[in-house]
Amino acid sequence: MAIFSLNNVRIQGIAACVPSATESNRDYDWITEDERELFIKTTGVLTRHISDSTSLASDLCAVSARKIMEETNCDPSEIGLVLFVSQSKDYILPSSAIILQHKLGLPRTALAFDVPLGCSGYVYGLSIAASLMNNTGIKKGLLLAGDTSSLSLIRTDKSAYPLFGDAGSATLLEYKEGSGRMDFSLQSDGSNYQAIIIPHGGSRQPITEESEIAVEVEKGVIRKMKNLALNGFDIFNFSVKEVPPNVTQLMTGLGYTVADIDYFIMHQANLLMNETIRKKLKFPPEKVPYSLRDYGNTSSASIPLTMIACLKNELSTGKNKLLLSGFGVGLSWGSVVLDTENLILPGIIEL
Image (cartoon, rainbow, N blue to C red; front, side, top):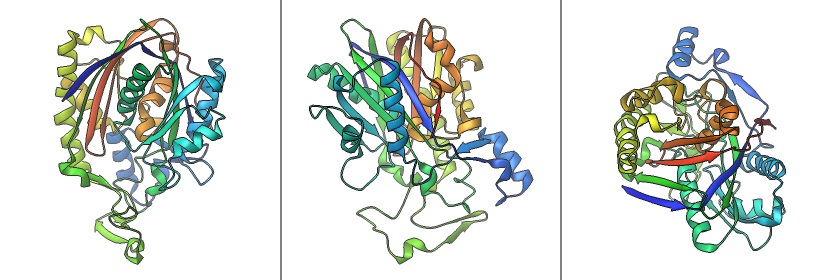
């Protein structure tokens, strides 16, 4: 377990953007009405925002970045780092972060690269950005986290299709001496990498005719090899087994109790899984917000999206100590404890 602290980097503000098109799981007629209601109850997902070719992850993040720079009066020339955390990049190559550097009018002196992580990506992204800013003298950086998972799904897969929504986010980070610290605990385990996977489309298995053949995996689950495949049983067991000790060891090492944490913001995986984790850690419900009902599982964007959707008023005024935890695809998981003060959080934008 990698536990470490980074100083002098703070979050100034966060913006998030979702596609304007929505789908309700009550209209998901691939399964029966009773199955729909059970799915909504157990996962907590009622409505999802769904992308098309005009609202890719990088587009949603670009809109978010422009908004947060505008709201914080940040001149684009001040940005020295662009980190794009996503598994929905525009092209196999080049890096989407470099395209975003140009699209956002940022200086050519800015570092820009992609980090291909999903559910744990926001926490990992904070650690990478804060590390670079501490070691390079970069004063301001953009952490762009977003995914358009719906574009890799097929409607005939009841295990995944009604779960995922699309979103992009932009977090403006500032290096400032004495501005506090972030304490991280990061982990990974590739032994069960197939638990969430798109089997075809990469270098190991390119797209072929076989990629386009729909196969019935089980009742209600018909998908192609180019579609996202989710083993919900394995992911549930992994998450409820690994996340609580990761969080506990981080808090214990820092000398924190549940009472010291104002809000525990988890990756929005699904309600049953997250509630199991919450109860194991003995966090009261009022400290654990959920954006699942209106947005679904938005992968790398889920933590910043939840901060805006559920805690805009609370985080915009005064100081708060937050515990953020991301977990899933990889398998990869991590937590961070950080302090915020008077965050700038514009409302969620629809594209």
